[in-house]
Length: 385
Ligand SMILES: Cc1cc2nc3c(=O)[nH]c(=O)nc-3n(C[C@H](O)[C@H](O)[C@H](O)COP(=O)(O)OP(=O)(O)OC[C@H]3O[C@@H](n4cnc5c(N)ncnc54)[C@H](O)[C@@H]3O)c2cc1C
Image (cartoon, rainbow, N blue to C red; front, side):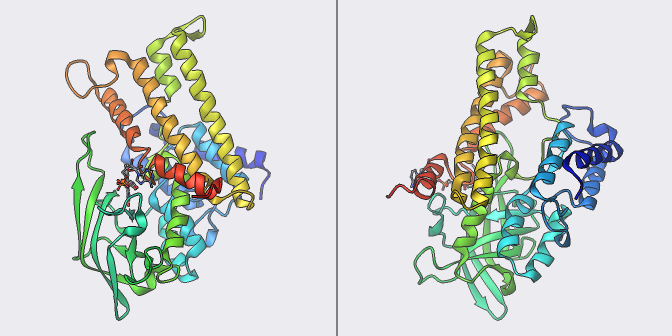
């Protein structure tokens, strides 16, 4: 493998060659579809949507250092990257728990960004207490027949496949009778009913299963042993920050510093408002400290020196940090900050309002802040209950 410095140069010249010009203009709301498609295809061709996966599963075969260098170069030009339920949650879980056949079937389409996945975990009576889930799967020949309901399923209306927790043994204790299974969403026994949110979007749905079918061979890990697989996937979910909500991230969005500079203005090369300046500085320090801490903690977890659940600490701090970031943006925007429609409100401000509202949900998905604190106490600090 090339030295890191040589690799960075290679990536820079590759980006120069393949990143379409209209993806470089910065701060656009809608990225041009054709250029975006070309860029994603170029990434997929190199295996760089999932750079650290083995090449036989469509990945780039890069080690951690080269992967980090690649991501840093892409981030430096604010080019879009792909982060989805498939790439950041299901893929890494399959790499660990899938059979060779399952990996060869499911990973390459994820690494090419061809199949959209959704996560069927939460149910009306099973959120924080996830192991209480009731959706049933009964074996009939070489298929499972599935009945029940999921809720808050992000992207279910657009998903091709679902990774789903189902109860395969109702007599076993609640953590022991669960299986982790994959099945297609486009079939007669699956009904998706979108839920409208306060920000006007309908990203989540209720999903009803009435005789839906899954192939028995698509259970990941042991039958009735899905709780271990489910927890590992949650660790991956909690270790990836906001990108885990799927789709494109990093795509030329205005940073907090951009917004504050524009709105507050500069005086003698410094932000004109000292109070915001201090909040911004504290925020940037927190972000840097969190990123370095989680990189170190990630290495320690991989080396077995700390619990894999350390990701809960990152998720908890990140959810708080992202809220305060949006609060600073709102303060800088003043009366033009939070609003919906009416004179003076433009699309960009609407986007900002949506972003502010979205951060209210960031302390809920993947387990609420209180649940993360419980996990940190129990599994990282090992405080007896
Ligand atoms: C943006 C977003 C996207 C989501 N996407 C998905 C998805 O794609 N798939 C999916 O399956 N789910 C998804 N969810 C659902 C999410 O996982 C659940 O909302 C979450 O786990 C909390 O469950 P609940 O809503 O049932 O709340 P509850 O579990 O009923 O919790 C209610 C309140 O009680 C507190 N609480 C509960 N138990 C404890 C405890 N033991 N100790 C301390 N406090 C406690 C909680 O912290 C919370 O404040 C999403 C949620 C959001 C907000």
